[in-house]
Length: 246
Ligand code: ADP
Ligand code: MG
Image 1 (cartoon, rainbow, N blue to C red):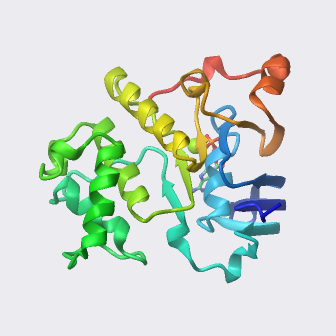
Image 2 (image 1 turned 90 degrees about the vertical axis):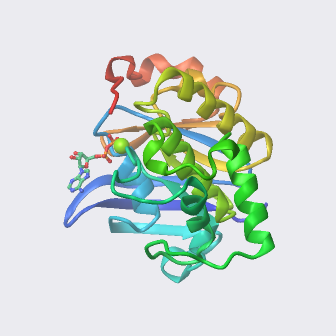
């Protein structure tokens, strides 16, 4: 079997010296679509950010593509759409320009780039996948929050990642956009895209999720198939009452 794309061994993450996620074990393999569930404040975002190196790593091991994270530098292989992320109202750029940022191999503020034919093809494809081809030349400030979320998914796709990590991609999105986003995620799953999706909307992802991880109080309380989860879910106090819209 090939190395997992993401592997955590007793990994702890948090803020300064406060461990929020404690001794998590997790392995995500190519082609898996993992839903990460759990109550608000349980540590889902800290887990995802932690494995990306975006908050403090307080113990254990993180391996990406078979390498220790500290010696892994091919960040374009990991696409990340943060929670609650939309574009600042002050951003003056077209949809296409924002998606083109995904073609930059390292992080810096966007600026005009000379695009290769391959860049253009990948950008067009990403816009098509999220259903925004017809808005390519629109100013992003004219888009709804849900459409902006799709722009950010397209930007992540444009870097051709091997795995896409999305933190509550459908939260706070209106019903119409929610449906489009579900279709986008289903299409990505059909193409074999490996995904880790933090969500409160498991039902909406039924049929695409291959694995479910439940985070409770900073611990991985469940890790198994959707069938196992259905058989055990009463034991995890699944959070119907924690729906929130940001
Ligand atoms: P979830 O995504 O499951 O809602 P989070 O990972 O955002 O949970 O938060 C888990 C815990 O970490 C919470 O107690 C939260 O207050 C704390 N936390 C989150 N972000 C920060 C931060 N930037 N600094 C300090 N504590 C934080
Ligand atoms: Mg969160």
